[in-house]
Image (cartoon, rainbow, N blue to C red; front, top):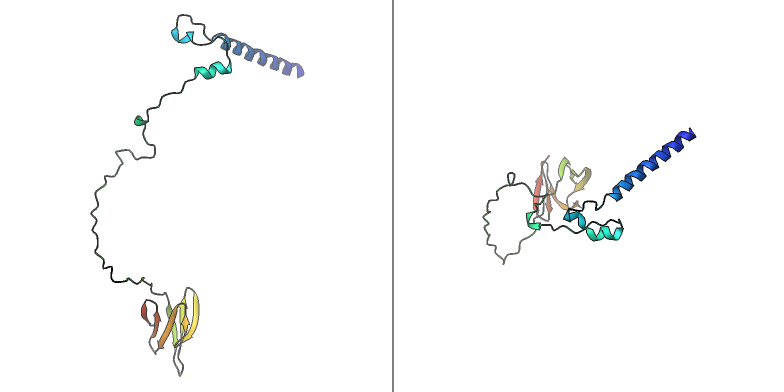
Amino acid sequence: MNKFLVLLVTVTILFWGIFLARLTGQTGTDKGDSATDTVEKELDFQGLLESIKPQVLAVDSLRNPFELPEAFAVKATPKVSREIARDTTKEEKPVVPVPKIILDAILPGDNPVAILKHDGESAVVSVGQEIWGVTVKSIEADKVTITYEGGKLDLSP
C-alpha cells in the first residue's frame, strides 16, 4: 500500500510539473503575430500587472436590472389635483374616534348601575363615574348615555 501511495504522489508531481513547464514555455512563441510580441517570456507578477488594462465601460448603454421592461411598464396617466380652499381662520379640532364600548346590562333601582365592556374588560359603573376616557352621564331603563372628548353617545343593550 505504501509503494502505491509513493507511486501515486510521484506520478501526480510529474504530471503537474510537465503541465506547468509546457504552460510557461509556450508564452511568446509565435514570432509573426504582433500581439504576442508584447508578451514577456518570463512570467513575473509585475509583468502580469502591467499587461492588465482596465476596460472602458459605456455607462450610457447599460440597462437597469431593477427596472421593468417596456412591455410591462404601466403607462402613467397625469393626475389632476384640485386644491381645496381651506378657511385658515377656523381652527380644526382633531377628530376623536368613537370609543368601542359595549353595554352588557342595566341594573335599575334607586341607584342604577350598568355593566360596560371595552377591549375584553368589564366594569360596573354608575352615573358620574369616569372610565376608559368616558364619563357616564345618565342610566335609564333602556339606554346609557356617555360623553367623551368627541361628543355624546347613547348605548342600548
